[in-house]
Image (cartoon, rainbow, N blue to C red):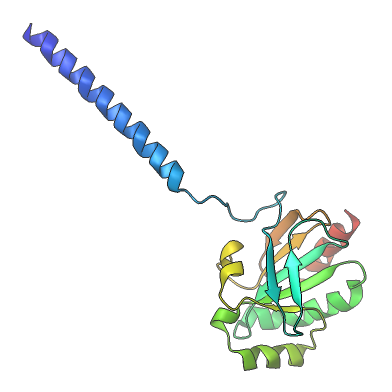
Length: 177
């Protein structure tokens, strides 16, 4: 009789633990982020930002041309190294692909941003992420960070600094897709 009571208690404790685990797991799923980090073959997270030229630019959904979105800051050494390549590639492919340079303005100074853009003669839109929300949306943890988005608004790839030849090869592949 005593053995039966112990077995029943053990079963009840294990069943209670299993129920608790199940409830705890459901709570974790409930509080998990609803949006995963941007990744290839998924739609690019939508956003609207003002730019240095005073216009508002949008990302999200279908477009006439593919898009390169580059996150950067004026204080970023690798961004400075990458800037001449972006300018050259824009000048070469501007009829076939759009370029948006998203400045991480929350961590930058506006006079430095303008000086950087002037120095590197950026002719493509420079968008201002003044509150850091777009950087968070794109899960940007290091800069420069670039996303290539096709005409359907789908991210094809995301990467940090690349050799200029490799970057050009990826841009050409995006244009041809």
